Length: 115
Image 1 (cartoon, rainbow, N blue to C red):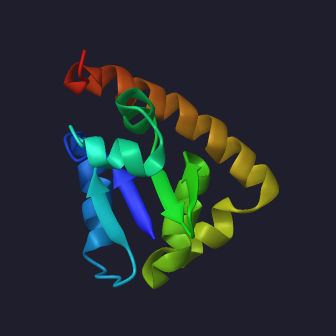
Image 2: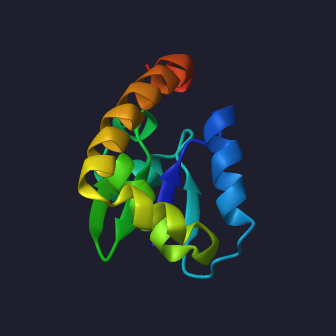
């Protein structure tokens, strides 16, 4: 599994660093900052990659709140988050909450985009 994240965002980096500490062998952490290879691999432009977390699993690109479920499911320490947030009503709330937070993080970090 590949996880595409914004390492230049302090909040994003802090959260991903928590996950990285678990040393899960089958997760590749890929910084999307000025990364044209990530754009090619995901078929997403820099704005789309900056806007949400993306995961590639078995050739499929998953984004946003659902991408977090994939990450949490793979990390034993965080599997409880997967089990909680995958519940239909909880996931719906999580999905919309994530979109609001991700939008403001995007606005905060969009200065790093290529023009």
